[in-house]
Image (cartoon, rainbow, N blue to C red; front, side, top):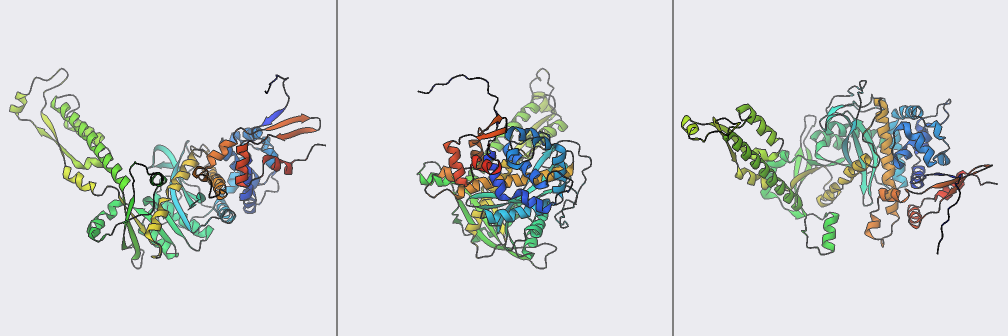
Length: 573
C-alpha cells in the first residue's frame, strides 16, 4: 500500500520542458542554426547570432505558438535557456524582428540548403515534388504593402531582394487581406515532407504562383530530374512547356470543362482499366471482407498535345481520364439535393407571386431568383419567367388575403430533366495531363497524383498545430520572413513523424506505422524539469520518463532529456 503525506511548501521551481524533448533533437539534426549562420554572418556588435535566435523561434512555434512579444515568457516557462544559452529576457520582439529582417534577404537560399541537407540526412528523394498554394489571412492596414509583379504567369525570375508579397484582398478570402504561400512537398510511402516554399501577392492566381515557384526551384535546388505534380488551378500549356524546356515533367489535374468536348469525341476509343490505387479505407474494407460498398477508380489514356503562343511546336503529352465510383455517387447525390432545394425555392416563390405578396414585382422576383440560384451548377437546369395574367384570369382569382394585392403575373419555371440526365453521364469523371515519359505507367502516375492530398494535409497542420493563421505583424517584410520561418517549422514537424516511421519494423501494428507528430508531441505535454535551488546555484533534475515517452525516443533514436542536459550542464560539486 502507498501512503501520501502532506509536506511543507517547497522552494523548488520547475520548467515545463514538454515537447522540447523531441523538438530540440530534430532541430539539431536539421542543423537549422548552423545553416542560417552560414548564410547570415553575425553582426560583430550583436550579442547573439541569427541562427540560434531563429532556431529558438522555430522551436517556439512547434512547442506552443505565441506572438513574438510572448516568446520570452514561453522561454522562461520551458527552460529553453538550458538548451541554447539564450536568457529569456533577451528574447524581446525587437531582437526577433531584426533576425527576421536579416532572414528575409536569404530566405530562399536558406530553405534550399535545409532541403538539400534534410534530403540527405533523412533519405528523401527530390525527384518527385508536389506543389499546392494556400492563402494566409492577415489583419491590419498594411498601407506600405505594394504589388510586387503583375498577376500573370509571365513573370521575371524571383530574386531574394524583391519587395515582399503584396498584402491585399483576394478571391479566396472575402473581406480579408491575404497573401498566398505555395508549398513544395516531397512525398513517399513514409508520408510528406515540405521542402520549399514561396509567397506571392494576395491577388495572384495559381499560374503565377507555380511559375515563380518553378523558377526558384531551378535556381536554388537545381534538380537534375523532376516530376512536378499540382492541381488544376496551376495548370496551363505554358507551365508544361516551361518544365519541358528544362527537361522536367509535369502531372496536373485539368479543368474538366476544357476536356469534356474532346472526351465526347474520343469516347468510343477509350479503353478503361481498373486502377491499382485504393484509399486506406477501401483497403481495409477488402482486407476484412466488409459489407460496405467497395469503391474503385478506372483509367483510360489517350495521346494528346499541348499548344501555346510561345511554343515552337505542339508538346506531346498524355491525358488520363479518371472515373471514380465514389465520386459519381457523391456527384449524383449533390445534384439531386441541389435540384430539390431549387425546386422547393421556386415553388415557394411561385406561391408568393400567385398570392400577390410583397416583393413579387419583376425586379424583386429576379433578385430573389438570383439569390436562390447563387453559384449552384444545378441552376442551369432551370428556366423561369413571369407571365402576365389577362383581365379574365385576374377576375377569376379569389380575393387577396390581408397584406396582399391582386396578382398581375404568374411565376412559371421549367426543369430540363434531359439536360440533368446528360450531365449525370459525367459524374465521377476527371482528367489529368502528364508529360512524363511513356516508360512511366499511367497507373503508377495516378497513384502518385493521389498523394497530392498530403500537401493539403500539410496546409491543415500548418494552420492548426503551428498556428500560422492569422498573422499580426505590421511590417510586410517581416510577415513574409515569418512565413518562411514557419515553413522550416512545418518541415521539422513532418520530419519527426518520418523518422519515427522509418524505425518502425514490418511486424508493428498499422496504427504505429501511421504515428503522427501530433501524437508524439502530445505524449510529452506534461514532461517537466525540477529546479532545486542551492547555495551553489540552481540544480536541474530531469523527470523520470514514462514508458511511452522512452519508447518514442528510442524509435526516434533521440537522446533523452537527461542525456541532452548532461552534455550542456556541469554536475554540482
